[in-house]
Length: 409
Image (cartoon, rainbow, N blue to C red; front, side, top):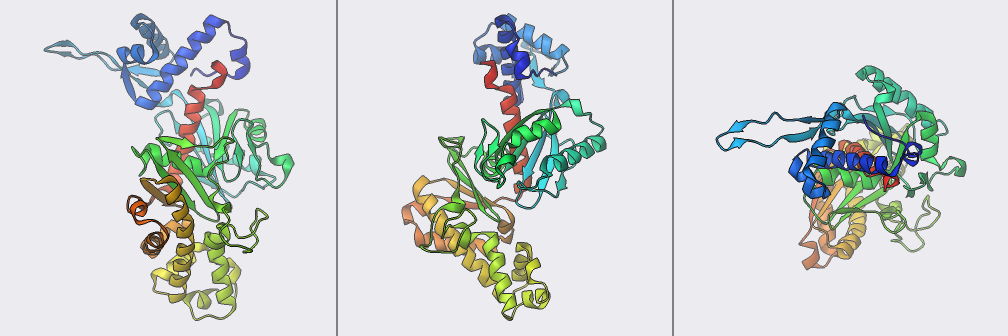
């Protein structure tokens, strides 16, 4: 394994630094392209073939790269093909949600090498880093991995994320906002943090429905509304890294108070939080519904999946609530569609599991609110693996940061 921290890089001579940078560039190209020939590296990196072969011999001896045996054909020997070994690097990926977190370890081939574990924690938990570290140690033990085999940790979480400083400005306690530093102290590893919706978008762009799509919007329909944007084939972050705050677009004048402190945000009329609040009020008022029969003694325990399951059984109240929420959500979607003219919108998150119970309402509302020529050009699809893509997006982000660390420039 070849990976140096910033202190080690700062102590390098210029020639050592150039060599290290070339090594990491080669590893990065193999990560992105799976396999390449020596001539590919020479062309892409503008270095000589002897230099490339020398680097490849070094990386093979370091157990990072492997090569195919050249086969002899009628036209002569086929060129050697190089690829990255799966066990050359391991990273820990963590996806933080509003009420739980998920953690898994990936190898350099984007394969999960441990089970995915749920952790009872969230961004405002004072025991956040300790709970994650304990879960990390448990998955390592179960997978027979050692702590020093994992080179870095990536964390995706909701909120306004400064990826350079490793700070989440949405955390209520200001002293706990330096998430990367807190986790680096606990894990004793390099930690990168990112916005969860952007990592969902990166995962969908790399492995999912948005693959080979240049302009797509990935929306996590959850307790909030997270937006990841793929514009011109790249994940868009904005000038300050705060793009995608769909939840807090003001929709209703003098509407309900949002958790951000403002009134009438889209989140207050179109999120899972609002759906649950509507259902709780209906149950408390004794509305005729399967929900009332089940939750009349404890309406505060209703979850979005309960409403979805009741709707699937034909419960009229649950169907109406999902319809109303979808119409409100589509109001916000119509704004995005007319602003960005995307080819594809992928919806994931707990509410996406309602499937056709919400899809029809969404399409009706978008056709109602959008210009026909624009609405007719966009596909709306439901992701079937949003949790996996969120975690795999984190892993891709970490590997890209590792192999393209700005400190080597």
